[in-house]
Length: 204
Image 1 (tube, rainbow, N blue to C red):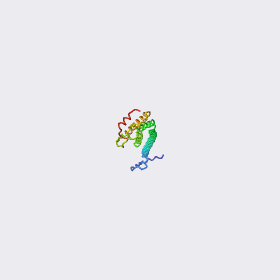
Image 2 (cartoon, rainbow, N blue to C red):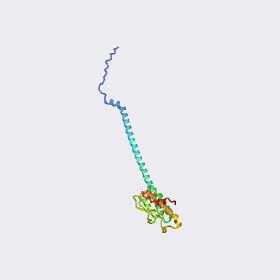
Image 3 (tube, helix red, strand yellow):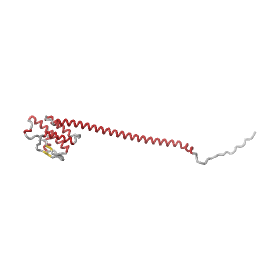
Image 4 (tube, helix red, strand yellow):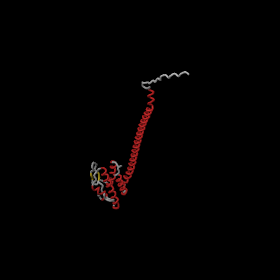
């Protein structure tokens, strides 16, 4: 039997230099994937937040525009209806029939209190009570910042006094005209003569 030779010495080689780059990259792979995922999540979140904010702003602007358009349409419709009633009331106020005239003047008095009535339209209402007042009766007053205009009072001479059977109707017209005059003076900042105020308080 041949004897077994003893094993030779075992050599161990240790590399003391830096690790190769692919080894380092392989070790950092999971961390890089995590960082990339977090970065993508952050970018997507920012994009979604910006898009949501933009959508909300656009929706708010559209809602505001719709509300404004609705308000304008409502106001336009209200003014159109107000003016239609005003034309109706003016026609009645200038009617020769006393009852119809009193109704028109009373309606104008209500319309004159509306916020829809503008200054130039309120001044137009002066023609109604001035027509009822008739000719110049000698009583005149000057309003604050306004031109002078006639008082509303019943005719004083017998020639212009209506027949006895028409006296109550004529009185209702004069009272309605006086009330309209008081309302217009209040709205336009004018002075109202005391006799007109007294006449406006009389029952019809």
